[in-house]
Amino acid sequence: MTVRTILHIDMNAFFASVEQQANPELRGKPIAVVGGGGRTVITTSSYEARACGVKTGMAIWEGKRVCPELILVVGDNRKYTYTSGKINEIFRDYTPEVEAFSIDESWLDVTHSLGIFGSAETIAYLIKARIRHSFGITCSVGIAPNKLLAKLASDMQKPDGLTVITPDDVARVLERMPIKDLCGIGRRMEKNLNMMSIYTCGELGRCEEGRLTGKFGVIGSRLKQMGLGIDHSPVVPFGEEDEVKSVGHSKTLERDIDDPVEIRRVLLQLSEMVGSRARKYSVSGRTIHLYVRYADFFTSWGKQTTLKNHINQSDEIYRAALSILATVDLEQPVRLLGVCLSNLKHQAEQLPLFEEERKKLFATQAMDKVNARFGSMAVTFGSLLKGREGVESRVIPPSWRPDGIKNVDVK
DNA sequence: TCTGGGGTCCTAGGACCC
DNA sequence: TCTGGGGTCCTAGGACCC
Image 1 (tube, chains in turn red, orange, purple):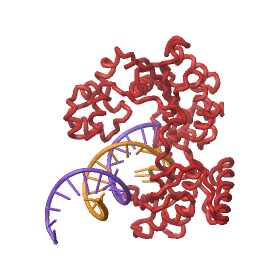
Image 2 (tube, helix red, strand yellow):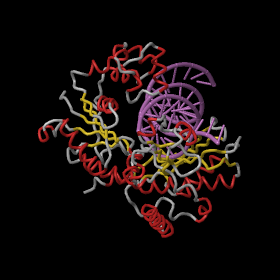
Image 3 (cartoon, rainbow, N blue to C red):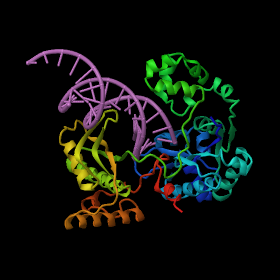
Image 4 (cartoon, rainbow, N blue to C red):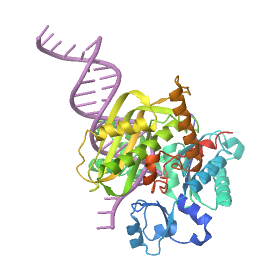
């Protein structure tokens, strides 16, 4: 087994940093990037805001409470995807093996670049300097023998950090590291492991595998490996990722609704967003999933149906979603609606046999092109026009891998 | 005055077929 | 007609990530 050298690079407060760079008046101040609607949470905040207790996921009123001077900035997706794409271009000057984990995090396998650049630290310094110079933003870099440890390392020093975990260091670093710092162990898993008296990675690594598999099934073996700092997963470069497995959209409504006409209108809207993206990816799916969250926030349900044929036309998705809705009685006003297409088939381009279907396909493609250029809802079905507000104001989540990142790879 | 939105993976149980 | 076992497909729900 050859020793690999992996970098994990994490942009510090990415959206907020981009905004502070774009508008000098925001620099040095506590800012929070938020969505445009009324029911939005804080997506990212600047380090100045974090210093007074602002956290990702906080409601706006809560952020304002802990930090009264907090400046709210409505997110601008195009800025972030553009910057992210450019940053990933920089990464590829040092290795072709770059995997975007999210819009602001990437792994680089530099094993085969060390001979050219000297060392992983040198590569890290070069990248940090270029990102700071070109975009005025900082990043934290972790260097380690695998992805799990590189990500752990990049988290150890923020902002603007550089942390190296050498193969010899692994056991020492993990011994007292809390398990929840590992990527893959969330709140629930932490609690379950705590109940087994496992609090640190060292304890997790020493735990008998049978105890873990007995409680967690196949995940148990993986947990043991994680505790030992073992991770063989490869860095998967652009264009070699697994094909997408589902395409979905959901929306928390500006206000709770129980009017069936309004509910159907939102469903049409969501179906159109799902369909248009599915067509862009050249996928169609057989399973349609409808998701509803009630006004009380705590009660929600999902229901799915599987069709005989694969579909990706918006009206077909809409009809399927409606058919699911028809099987239930809504108990409360609705807070959130979601539509998801899965069970996907990736298809080659194929023209329908019949004139009528060809026309429909061409019309759809023309619509997709305009939407791709001018924002997702620039052109859409007439019945949506009344309900358009709010759709354009969504902020993409940092985890969204936008096409902007994928596209920069095409040379 | 509450708590977004995009995904992936895993499990359990039931229907159905051989 | 009854029995059991294996495999696949489907639905529902939960955990995890950013």
